Image 1 (spheres, rainbow, N blue to C red):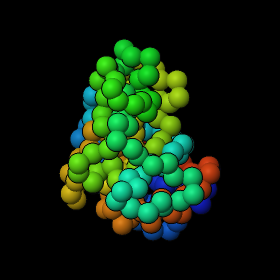
Image 2: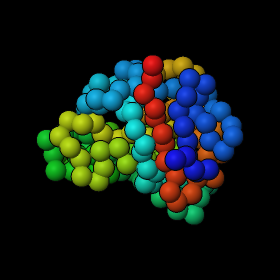
Image 3: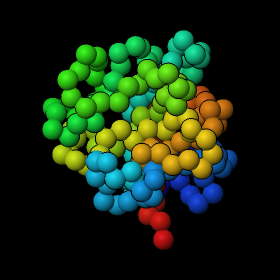
Image 4: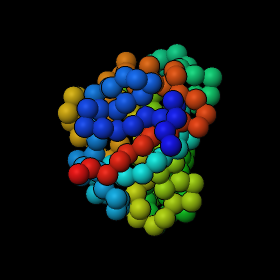
Amino acid sequence: MKTPNDMVLSPRGLRFRGRDFPCTIGRGGVSANKTEGDGATPVGVHGIVGLLYRPDRMARPADWAVPIRPGDLWCDDPRHEDYNLMVRAPFPASHERLFRADPLYDLVIITDWNWPRARYRAGSAIFLHRWRRAQAPTEGCVAMRADHLLWIAQRIRFGARLIVPPQP
């Protein structure tokens, strides 16, 4: 059953609180069988478990938002015990930088995809973040315009979910 806090992916974009926001998804489309590196956005109901922001680039968007600091990373190595968790540099295993030179991760909404106890090679880090440009696919995340992402981040509450239905 959908709630007012749910964000629902549809062919028209991401629907939230009666509005449709243009967005992009993974280069691998939508998949019910997500694996690490496939570029797919996973089908399912994904809880929202975190909100990160760059305090050097924007004001805190919500009282529960956590600042991204230099050295913050996300482990994407399925062989490592910290797979699909936020970690700190220096970090020996494969990872993605959260404190980036570009603005893609200035604001990040974190889903509970394959978290907190990650399954081996089931995929890491399904985020909602800023897009590189309209219609440019992601590695599996959902991406959108910065102002739309901020509007959503300022309004989501405890219990919010990202719903990704199977595509026909």
